[in-house]
Each structure stands twice: as C-alpha cells, then as structure tokens.
Image (cartoon, rainbow, N blue to C red; front, side):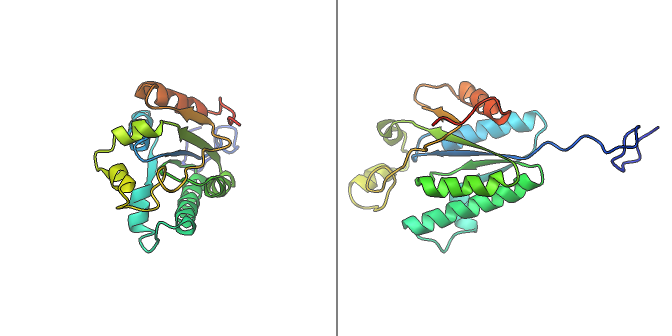
Length: 196
C-alpha cells in the first residue's frame, strides 16, 4: 500500500506521534554567553534538520514589550510573554531557544509552567562569574552601571536570583562552546534531571 498523505500507514492505523516540542531557556547575567550558545545551538539543531524559533530577550522586548520599563514587575511580564509564545510553539511540536537574562526565579518558573503544559522545558543557567561578564562587556554597560549612569542593572544594583532547579548549569569561562552545546542537546533528549 502506498502512502496517500492521510496519516494512515499500511496497517490502517495512525502514523507515529509527532516529536513533542521543547524549549531551551538560557538565563544568566549580561555577558554570560547566552547569545553565543544560542547561536551555536541553533546552528547545530538546524544542521540536524530541526527548525528552531529563537526568542532573544532584547528582540522580544523591542517588538512585543516595547512599552515595558525595567522594573521588576515589567521584567517579569516580559518573561511571562516569552513563556507564553514559547508554549504556543511547543504545543505544535516546535523547538524554541530563549536567550534572556530573566533575573527572577518566580518569572522563570512561570515561563516553565506555561511551556510544560505542552512539552518539555530545559532551563540552562549560565553561571559565568560577574567579573568575567564585566570583562566581556564591549558596550560598556557594566561600567556605566557602576558609575550610576544606568540603574537597575542586573548583577550590579539589581539582583540575579540563581535558578533553584536548572537542568543544565554551565560556566562559560571554563566550559568550551562545543561541550556546552553537547550538554544542552543531551538535556533536550531527556537524559538529565533538574539540578536542585
């Protein structure tokens, strides 16, 4: 019997269930390596034939949350919006890579809940030390924050709450990029339980 494109196999049953969707949520200080890892992970996934939706915190803020300030409430709302969009993509079997500072635990857990209704959520905490992140800061944001020119800057005068249960923890100052991507791919395949 040949396929008619109706989802029925030779036995007349339904074809295999689609792969469940997954969100990889990269969180950490500015300069921790979120964009670098996101770019490498997306390239790796796309090379394997897996389309990916990227939700970069700065891009989402520009296009979906431009009315928001950097208050705690507005930062949390921005992360909830990211979680909602990621959940919608995951609901349809998609793969999402989020790269956002997401400094507060409660908002990250809300994003997790929005995604896990529909699929898997892999939280990746980039635990790169503050001094390393500052050293990588080509825009001078940390220096401006330390000089008081920027207020509410995560890691300087606003806290970053480390995740209580990340599936993967990576310090990019000591972990090579290829190893970081491999560890995330392993977690995406369900081989890693959250670290408490």
